[in-house]
Amino acid sequence: MPTSYYPHPIIAREGWPFIAGAFAIALLVQFFAGWLWALPLWLIALFILQFFRDPPRVIPALAGAVLAPADGRIVAVDKVQDPYLSREALKISVFMNVFNVHSNRSPVDGEIRDQWYFPGKFLNASLPKASLENERNALWIRTKEGRDVTCVQIAGLIAKRIVCHVHPGGHLARGQRFGFIRFGSRVDVYLPLGTKVNVGIGDKVQATQTVLAEFH
Image 1 (cartoon, rainbow, N blue to C red):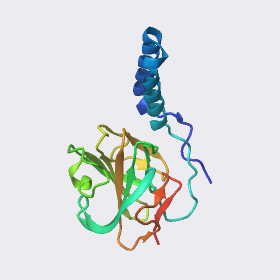
Image 2 (image 1 turned 180 degrees about the vertical axis):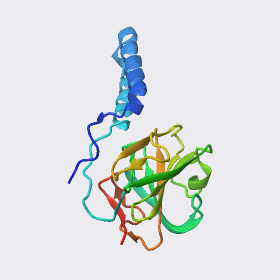
Image 3 (image 1 turned 45 degrees about the vertical axis):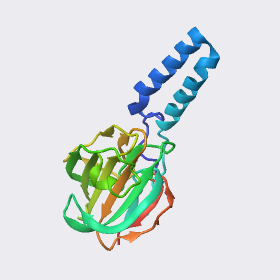
């Protein structure tokens, strides 16, 4: 099985300024005030370092697999109205806490047909209403078989920045890294009706490695 689109830094580039700043502040406080004052800042710096980790992942070879776009816990598996493509769809939602890897990866192979960004609130991303009220970035991906998949990055209570590196007209391969959400968030995937779902509420998933669902 191939590894997902390496090489890229094992510590995500999106976090480099935060990591450098946190370690610099801790070092300065230690130099001028000593270990006692610096210790909490070193702990914060280590937390930020672990938040931005971005390890390689093995891509399952299963044909028709829809891969998890993020690490986290399944908080929704519902038949809903896809608000982006105006269709009935199956929605699977992955909630990321601050200890999960926050790098986002494509669930399928396909062409990016469109993209939508919506400024919004910063509610707890585990809440159902976060899907439509929080700040979010949605990608419409069409597979070569003509199946439409909507993948939505959603900011959370602490997250204040959605990063997306791809644009309409581009192509994504499943497992390919396409973005990052900083400090706690959620990713929703809308799939065609009839897709076989392999996960349930409360399941823990890993980006790329967990098969959320299967096309037939």
